[in-house]
Amino acid sequence: MTFKEKVMGLLNAGLEEHPSLFLIDLTIGGGNKINVTLDGDNGVTLQDCINISRAIEHNLDREEEDFSLEVASAGATSPMTNPRQFKKNIGRIVLVKTNEQEIEADLTDANENGIVLEWTAREPKQIGKGKETVEKKAEIAYADIKEAVVVIKF
Image (cartoon, rainbow, N blue to C red; front, side, top):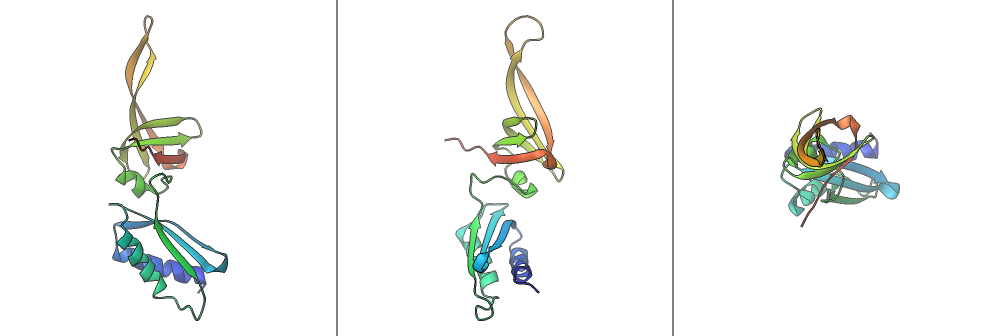
């Protein structure tokens, strides 16, 4: 069993004990520097990071292989990569970039296949001069999303 497989097994065991948490990224760099990025259905607390850190660290032997470990939450401005992240952010404004367009809109639904965005736009009237406000809706598959972030407004 490789070092990465061992770490992944311990991480999965830790996540099974805390089902509201899920993995965003795991990297093991030079010198066995382990970086774990988590998110959670209800956010991630400091205690959540400590629990996952302990699940990994207490089951690895530093005598066998030296390592460093960092467990952190996905930042508020980090791109969303996991369908569970989209589901937990339903009702928030997101900025989604695809190959064809960039949309800032309300995230109204998320399922296993993709997301639904809704927004209002000002467009030229069908008849006559001027513009009118129209309701727009777009269904976007996860495969078509290049980047998606929550828009934070104060």
